[in-house]
Image (cartoon, rainbow over all chains, first blue to last red; front, side, top):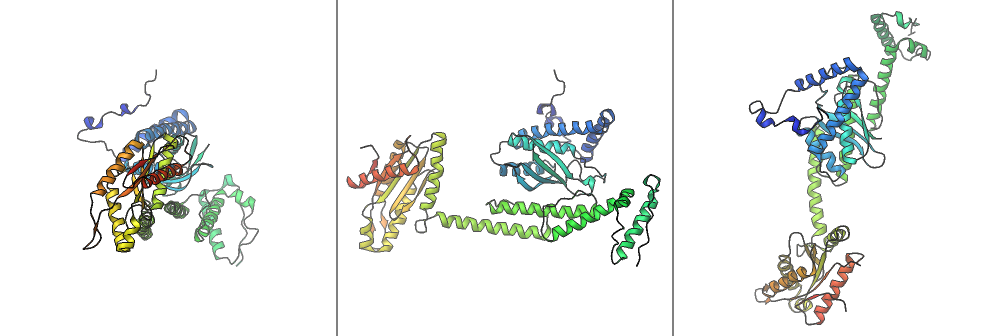
Length: 170
Length: 307
């Protein structure tokens, strides 16, 4: 019996729970939680395992996000435009597509401007958006019902001013 | 100017500040040198000074990416880091977004909008608005009959194709009726072509009012019209046809100050059948039913039945 298995109900009823403060919170506090969790994960399990957990968590979030906010969509065009719309509306980031081959080769290159996780971070010489990688891959998996993986190839932390992901079908 | 020989230190003994100073000295020397000696950048040298190698790699990537961008080559990717290269990558990325969006526009998606390229964004978005307006205009011109302002044969055929797909994929019924104005030729012969046009306009207007939004009624050719009724069986289609017939019978058609006509139509109706191989089979049967209506007195509806 799992104790913490994710369900949307676990997030609660924010309207009744925060009648004065509402459902918004500062991005730095969101990052505070993410970066401290990551800190402890690395401390206990090492950087690789920490990354692996973050990727898996992002993947779960992406799959749930797709079910909750994106579907139903009936075409690749609708999938892309709906995802762009929702990511912007939820203030997660500004998604743009550089190339999209959803059929056949299965290769998509996209960028996320003003990314919630990393925009404005200092240069660190490594890409940091592991959680996003899992999230993005799950969106494509949920849409296509095939296995996809995502790799961040440019990030604020490597000097870029947008996050660029290469998403490929496995 | 001669470039002084460089004496490399062992990497593990080098002070970082020294490396930076020496590296900068080399770069400055190279920048002021008319040509770079071929033996300067040797592999062992680069191995001894990885920071210098990194700078060289970055400069090379900046050089290559800027050269690629200058000729619109957008498929080269570079993995060096840094501010200048990242800005160039940002430009590359924006141009690739733009390429993708232009491809979508070419496919007919006029919802594309650009908001990341300054003045160019405004120009691109203005172009999309104009293209959308032109597209709407052209689509209308291509699909609407100029005289009667109802769908033309092309629009009817496209609608038939789509409607028939539902017959095959979802087992839906499809009824088609063909209407022909009785003794239309005599209108032209007696009162002239303007009177004929007035009759066509009025008849099309009266008949098209009898159809639902999900149906299509259009001009099939000459004085012939077609009603396409998806998801409708032949009994309902027959009722629609009878209603159309009645509506027209009671409508006077004023063709000039002194001439008012009453016109009638003959209508043939048929419905999809399991053995059909295309919508053409239904059209053919409706045509046969129309022929029956004409042969048996006109001003009536005939439903196709097997002989």
